[in-house]
Image 1 (cartoon, rainbow, N blue to C red):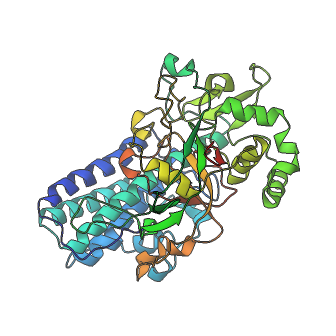
Image 2: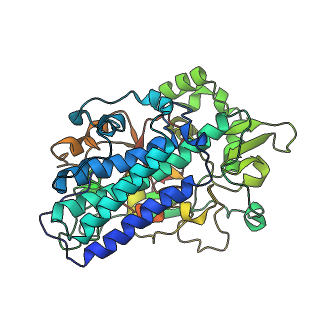
Image 3: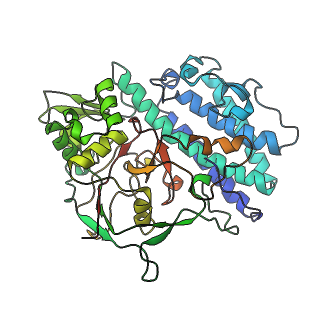
Length: 448
């Protein structure tokens, strides 16, 4: 994803705050990696995943390639081979190894990767202390946001790696959380909305037009430009769908009834043998008959029944919505509500590393779990907004070339950094994707 560019210079006092944020985000990545062994960091358990060691290197590659090599005169790369070895998909920069081969990178060693990170950190620190030019600061902000994306990816990737390990190791031991374990989510309620104004019924503004004088405001280019959309009256559920509610769909033979499934979804279900969300395993020893793998290891489904269901594909989310007689929201319905809601929730900083139940004591007139817990599938295809233009050069490959055959998700998850999310943020995945912390919120037409 690419930051929206402006022609206005940031204030000089911004550099100290930017350096602090750079250090904080880089440290968060290392803190997440600290419980892992070098062997853990080598594993690549699926085509969508990458080894944690690769994430550590690629995020450093991004700063080296798009900041240091362009804005530091005479900069010497840490290793010339890293320019192509840790390239992800930027074809304008040349070729790169196939993604499926990343687990074969036993060399460079982890020690070399950590030295690479130190080299890049030191160079960015020296750059910022010398009050760099405007564009380099914008690139550093972009690199920070990119690193936060890869912190979340590292969490989802290591979870899948540990799940595929026959020993099913836990990323961290589970801490006592009795209050969460026995919490009861409030009944699902419906919040009604009639968008627009008397003069312009149904017309609302979505997306971002950055303030050129607000140096701390960030948006990826796929969130721009701000533009009007038409929204008829609609209702959104007050919280995300829970595991208990999804279990009812399973027990009603939801995975065996094609009337609820899109054609491609049904074909995918049969080809992949889906019977439940990813990480749900049958277990006759538990009352519910299921256990669920988490970053803290396996837990009986009964302990998680009130938490939002996660690791669903779009096809599963859509099938559940059809089974319930409802639908998935559009991304603009979701944003309309989120723009009126403070950003707060269960993010990676909470260290829960799993969705948590909605609070029964919360204001019933306000939505819960819009931010954090689970990414929420929408029915909206991932396309460019009217007037969207990708940036020229290699950075233009960040968003624009992926605007095909993917659906938009909103809101962040329990492994998203809190400072990374906002109401206009657009995530996107192919509809069969399940390894992310993705769930759903129901919607209905009409305001009553």
